[in-house]
Length: 195
Image (cartoon, rainbow, N blue to C red; front, side, top):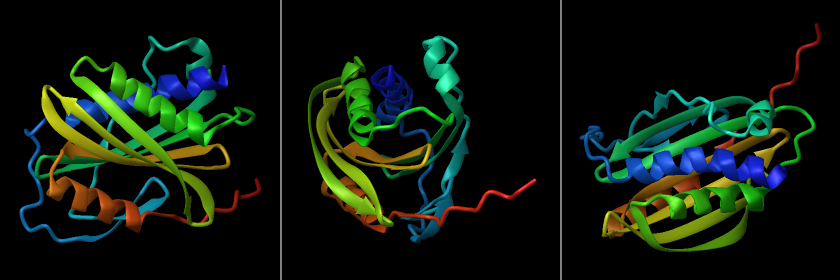
């Protein structure tokens, strides 16, 4: 069941990201001013403010998946033709989490998108603020156009974060993705207040 939970939730987030990579309707930051941005307990350098994206666990998902999730937060923005997305999923206590399954679930969901073809990917172990993380590099065609992506998955406690940068296979997208990925840190855990 754990693999099913990770893959189902990652599918929801990844499909939205893959489709957003082809959406040019959102304006980019014309000034391109980079600054640290903190969203959902994670800080990254961004070329502008990340906007909150309403994300709910779809009713069509397996009830076990819906029951495993306490909360989903998602923020994103366009930068030129690329998309930056930060997602945080908080799971109920006792749900077993896996970096590899979470990252692979997102990859599999993108691969299943009918607009995506010829996807290849690699996973590489990483560290984010002292936590084990997994960096995923992607190459694909989206609507018959060459595209690329970088994703970082990190788990702390019952929380999974995934940061994705997806866009056309250009030097600009690669530079954006590398800069964002190098900048990611987790905010310190907040102590739970006693009642």
